[in-house]
Length: 186
Image (cartoon, rainbow, N blue to C red; front, side, top):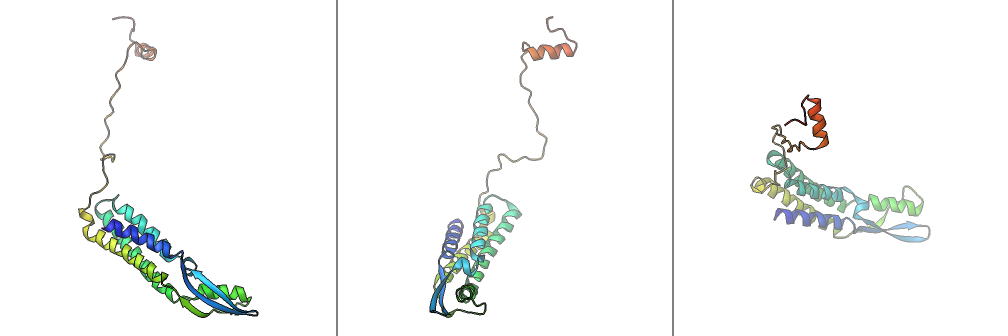
């Protein structure tokens, strides 16, 4: 449930930041000029936090014990941050104001007739799904299986096994001579 919720939430948040969040018009010398701003123009925070949440979601299964709790908290915080940034982006007109200033050639120009689409709210829903995944990981993560520790070292020195020595190999004959042994004698 948490894996599905987190992955779906990250996908929804990332998708929604690529959509049109706001639109308006700028008054220029030739008349009204229509302007639009995508979510990534308004704020890059939801997309960045969705990527962090996706990475944390994968990391939850790769770590154990206190590491899992820390990553779960990071997952929940990235979801909460995505929700907050998306909801703050609903009323943000700075991206359209910048476009209006460029279109008018006047740095004090602002956008008129500002309207917003539902995409910031969709991004907030994606963030809520990431938050849900983080809360589930905090609550139940200690019960989930972890990645195999098969290849981890336990700290003890490894005992190296020596390969069987073939006494007829030329290098072994030379080593026997170096030790002062007679390789021809039996």
